[in-house]
Image (tube, rainbow, N blue to C red):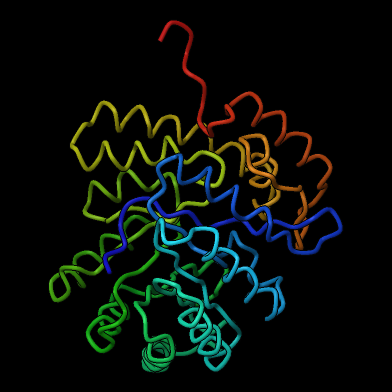
Length: 307
């Protein structure tokens, strides 16, 4: 399995009373596939995995795989406090039919490199399907250095790639330069929409981009333009992506603003999250207004007059 192109870490829909809304998964997935998405992640950071019970996590995974129905690969995030819980989530992902998993370091214990290699090896073995490392030190508290990624790639062959979430392009360069020498097929995906263009220009394979929940088309077109070497088209798409990043910037965490904008773009999504940002009413109002101005129902910015 080669992970490449545009993957979207799916929002987890809730009803107005805060319970899971699994019926909303299928229309959201359908809209994103129509927008050119290559694959999905269930239970990434954007999917609010940390705020779900074990039963809810299982339900989201099963609903997502059923909704996608073989039309694209589905990776499942298995982040957990410790290795044993992550292994349990990994086994369920395999049994549910996931194409692969996305594995964080343990979210409580802080391990050295040897301990992290053992952790990722155990999770990958439990999964029995392709594993991507997930490097998001701003939230996990544990950075995955290029040297560590090289060790894991060398010792755990079923680890087939990494999602690198963060603002540092040099980390992407470090992984590419160290790991690709021994594993040319090792996938490097970025999580920051603003880094998608420069990272792919440097050799990355694509991105797992939360902004794709509301605006898949410009991201998919950016990936295609970069693959084709069409720099003017890539520059135009990159500019559009940067403009759209004003929407998730309205809230921290960004998930509430993303849900509001996804609803404006055409997905059945209530403005309900488990971890609420400061002043959620303001976020809902401002995100709806901004998305209404920046997005069409197809999930991209409207064309300029006369274009």
